[in-house]
Length: 248
Length: 153
Image (cartoon, rainbow over all chains, first blue to last red; front, top):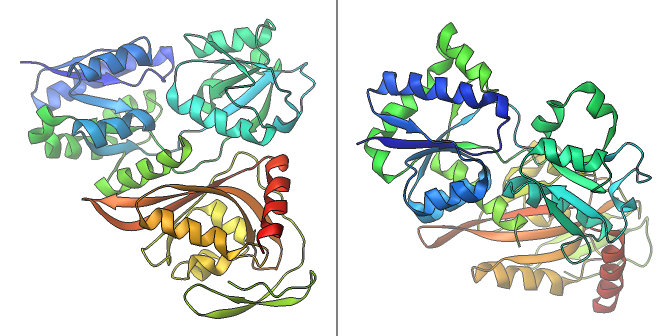
């Protein structure tokens, strides 16, 4: 029997091959058959979770909440480094210089990333903007969100900081960041599901020592991390408590 | 809490729900909420601060060492009516979430407005503490809250 591993679809497309390399390395180290399944969007990934087709996941904080509280998953590690932050951006020729200057009725471009969208909505609250007085334009990728802004199809957009920084300097020049979140306390986390819990200690040990050799450090660097950091259950519970205040 | 301040710049005596009193200075100077930030703190079941993030420290004007171990009402502003906090405590002690607009007092006597959400930390079916997350409120909502609290005092 093979175990299923997946990754929250919020990572940049150019890292797809790096996640396959990570999975191959992990299989060899653990001596376990692990199949990596990458989903195009959050909806497809959630269906797989609901159908019990996910045994291990690098999840965004919102999905981690669901998996820990409702699906019996255990968070074992998180990538060390910057927490998950996002930006509200407009085209450079937009008249608004700050969020409170955004008028009611604007069109918002975003993907279906629940974390980015929730934080984005919170950052619009100082302008009294909510679902009732804005129009959301869902796009499949962050590149498409950017295009919607540059073509004038949308007035503002939500992007993870990492995706914004990954844009070319030319594209970034044509955009303006109105605000950057500085939440500081929410992160992607690495979780194992009930079927893999007997191997949780071995997986944790493997991840936490990954930065110690040059070859394995290179795999981590390619994924945008410097090392895995241990997580206690209470760390995750605290993050979930914080997230619950953001969705009310 | 009892409100005894006739004008800004004076010292005021706060009487807290636990019976303790505290003299505070109020300057009337507002510190703008830093865009994009969340202020996060955690207390035990008695409201003693056990954890806070850098934004909490920055906005309060205290150091982290001065905050940890202190009651959360160290931030209580005399303009906040006691009823607002009674509502907060009765909600979270009953296991429910509480939301509201709060004027917080800084160490220097100034203040800042937040939209606050407090949730009980429930572990194994038991409340072990509370987490409070504050975010930026719109000016319209702050103006409305100021008027409401003035009525309640």
